[in-house]
Amino acid sequence: MTSFSSPLSSAPAVRLSQVTRTYGRGDRAFTAVNDISLDVQQGQSLAVVGKSGSGKSTLMHLMALLDTPTTGEVDVLGTPSARLRPREKNLIRNRPFGFVFQQFFLNGSQSVFENVSLPLVIAGVPARQRRAKVMAALESMGLEGKARNAASDLSGGQKQRVVIARALVNDPAVIFADEPTGNLDSATGAHVEDLLFDLQRRRGITLVIVTHDPDLAGRCDERVTIADGRVAMEGARAA
Ligand SMILES: Nc1ncnc2c1ncn2[C@@H]1O[C@H](COP(=O)(O)OP(=O)(O)O)[C@@H](O)[C@H]1O
Ligand SMILES: [Mg+2]
Image (cartoon, rainbow, N blue to C red; front, side, top):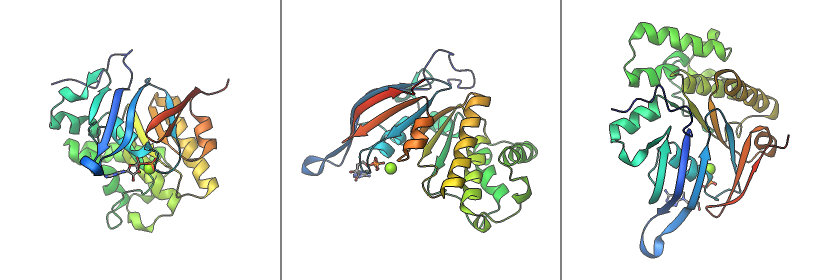
């Protein structure tokens, strides 16, 4: 069993090598991601930008092992994902990866505490340790007072902070965020952005952020623009 807790320090967090993803077959085949190669270095923030339908979410799902390429290879922390068993992929999604999606994916009828506990329950962490980790993650998002509230009772910004707390609770190496501020007003969105970049700066967490927002993309170390499933432009942040 491969260990992901101490990755090779020089290995990219994620490496895509000539990755293509085609949906459907025959005349209905549609290539959403077309021969993309890119590296995301550990500790880096990468913005994936492009028009709606360009293939950004498909690309992110491939990077995060939520989807499998039709051809090409995805390496995670130096390990080729094609060699991983399903159980090992699940472990990676659960441990070194955290997810922040626009649509929140919170269970509204459960408490904030229960929502944030979920990755730890999946990982089999004992209840006492779960409690400490969940409360630490909630505190880091300023939500310690909301632990017992139903998730449905929160504002949009609070919900997104709960989602970030849940992404953080397993101490991930990489956070994947798909339009993390898309449903938030600009002030709340800016606050959520600050929280994400703070995690990158203070904990060395790698960020992969799909966004339409040029300001958010401009705050990332690197940007890749996708058009019709291909890389149209790549660039680092101006100094
Ligand atoms: N499961 C699927 N089956 C068929 N086509 C899909 C599927 N998922 C996405 N697509 C198509 O792939 C293209 C890229 O989608 P997506 O990656 O969601 O783009 P983006 O996130 O940039 O808006 C779109 O044309 C979309 O309709
Ligand atoms: Mg999308």
